[in-house]
Length: 224
Figure 1 (spheres, helix red, strand yellow):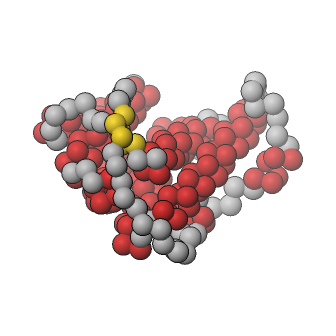
Figure 2 (tube, rainbow, N blue to C red):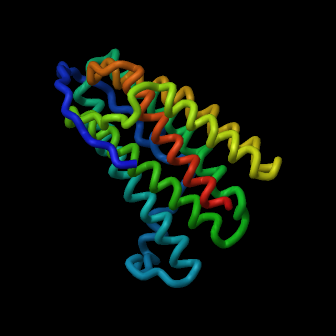
Figure 3 (cartoon, rainbow, N blue to C red):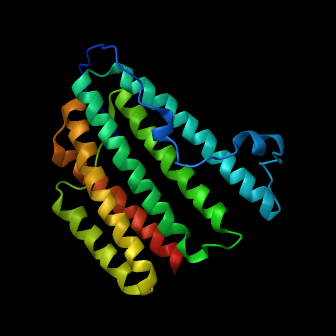
């Protein structure tokens, strides 16, 4: 989705805050990054499955480090009430990210492509989240395409129902988890954004619903 960007003036007071633990932002298991770095192949041209697995994990680790940096930078700009909103939004984003990537890998679970797809998905969503938070630090908010929530919400529901109708029952519960994790993340993030940027919650929900529709469309194309 090509989104134009508009600059919103945001008044943020400086405050001394306690940094949200990077462990909570990062994925909740050890990545053995030091071990992987020591054995790092040429990730510009990975060939074997082993090289692809290592490079995909290293790529995710780099994106996660960038996210942690921009998250801490944004947090330092916020007063305490908005800091708590950001923390809640980030926790819910983690739950959504994990559910989304668990569904994305489900058709190859246990196979050689499993970690490649999984870490690739984590890296993709983490990069997008870092870009979103960077926009908040720079007072730049993407503009949605649709004029109101009804249009992307109807489209998202159609895409969701079509995908549910095509996938096997064993995958349907995972897709439901994705949708159930995304809704509270969207609402919490829009609560933060509206207080941070002075935009309406509707403005944010339209944009995020458009983005989720694109993600589900991509999932459908990958599955079929």
